[in-house]
Length: 262
Image (cartoon, rainbow, N blue to C red; front, side, top):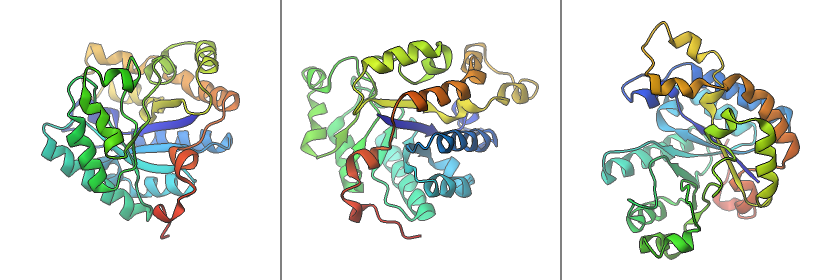
């Protein structure tokens, strides 16, 4: 299985004008500690503004043996997306000395995306794979309704969608009992299933720190439910399943394209 996490700040999701907070630093360090204790490496999809504020954190991630990849939040238009992706890649490569080959785009859907334009951009930037889609059917089936999905094959971009069963990872990992995660995980392919989580969900004190400072919208308060259970669940998950990064699992043989310059 592939372990992935998105490194972005909850406060920034709430309002893009908010500065990056210290909570993502704390929660990411906790995640690194848990992964290290369980001898597990994974892929960290990192948002540009987090990397810009905390380059030391990004170096810690890379030096712990994890893959560093791009995480791009929703953009208003294609030009802005291209700008954000290019600058995120360059920043991550400058910080780590490693070639970035993967991307996750939080607003990518099978319904409203021109995948030809998307894959053209990724190929131009040297991206090898994308792991953004959360489809409710196979990409081959969905391509009947959106033929531009075939662009992944045309442009030789590997697409690793998140599980068709949406209960293995994501916010359901936080909310549901672990035995359900374990049961569903055992039913999924052990070789290539992608587990995903938001690192900020390990911000165990974030709600207490914020509730007296800002007004948290009622529909956002559920983002904090079950956070205290995540460390225990993660330890169980990492003991019950074998994980690696996308790079380790699929691309490690071609190390010339992913060389460390440190």
